[in-house]
Structures are given as C-alpha cells and as structure tokens.
Image 1: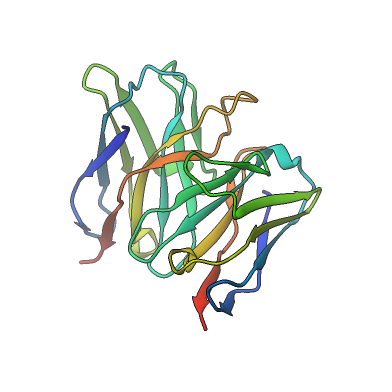
Image 2: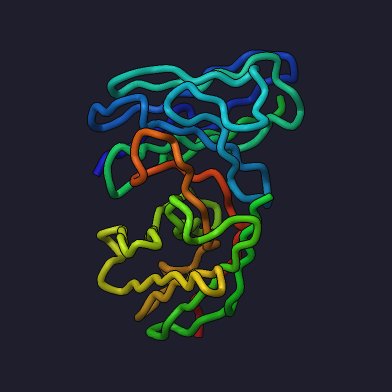
Length: 108
Length: 124
C-alpha cells in the first residue's frame, strides 16, 4: 500500500497569510493520481484538487496543487476564515486507495 | 445537484452486522461513476472501505474484504454496505460517496460527492 504522510500535523496561521501543506508518499506515483480534500468541523470532506493540480468545481484559484514522485504540496494563498479546516491528501493511482492522516489549519 | 443520503442503525453490537444504505438523487447509479464507502473513526483520518461499478466490478480494502459485501440497486438508485463480525475498531463515521470521472481511468478515482456521513458505534 502507498502510505501518505502529511506534515505538519497542525499549523497555526492568520487570515491573509499563505500556507503550503506537504504530503509525502512511501512510493513514487504520478501526480495525475493525487487529490486534496478539505474537511471543515462536523462536515464531510470536499474535493479541492484532483490530478495533482486541477481545481475541483467551485474552488477558488487561491488553492493550487503541485509536486511529483513522492512529494506533493497544496498551497493556499490569502487565507480566508473558511479555509481553516483539516486537509487530506489522497492517492488513487492504485488500489487500495489511501489517504494521509491530515493537516489541521487553525487560526492563530 | 447530486445528493447522497445514508440510512442505517447508529448502534451495532459486537460480532453483529453493520448495514448501511445510500440513496442517490440527481445522478444515476448506471452512470460511468464508481460508488463506494469511506469511513472515519472519531477524531481520526479517512479510510477507504469499498467501491463498486454498476457493471459489477467491485473493489475492497484488503484489510476489510473478508467481512464486506456491497451491492448496487439500480432500479431504486441506491447502494448498500454490510460489514460482518464488527468490533469496536469498526466504530466510525461512514460516508457513502461517488467517485469522479477524471478522463484518465475509471478506477481508482477521487471522490467528488460525499454524503453527510453517519456515525456507527459498535458497543454492547
């Protein structure tokens, strides 16, 4: 199985700042099969990025994904209050599909 | 607008069977999407459980496969999950989901629609 490790576990930032979240894989895979989800407290996850860098429907261009091989990132610029949530990376190159353990963005 | 609505008991006794159903509106189970289940233990991360295509192709998480059954009822546009011999480790919020069509491959695929989720607690 491909193990995804996200770092850091928690980040404390202020609205307006820019943040980069990391997702590292135990095996190399194509960025075409990397997604990111946002999960606000008490809600279901929401697809943010798929195919490594493609924004899902309705996602603002403040969100961007990049990376290759074993290292992938999600960058959020100009943080808005609604961006403070937990973010999960997800590989779907091969089954079983797997998720990272999540990075929590909290307001400083 | 695609909506997924789950139903099923919130409490299951150890060693018994967990059963959940997901009713879909705004989309057809006969589409080219995969449909499946993901779970999230309280305070923890996401774990894929199983996913299925209406043509019959079914994929299971190997760690759960021996205890799982999933099925699609295209006539009623709903799909179901059963997990046998449950233990406290199966306590989680279970989400039924629709996998996206990305144009690269049908499976595996990311999830573009999630139900709200339902907490299933395994306890006597």
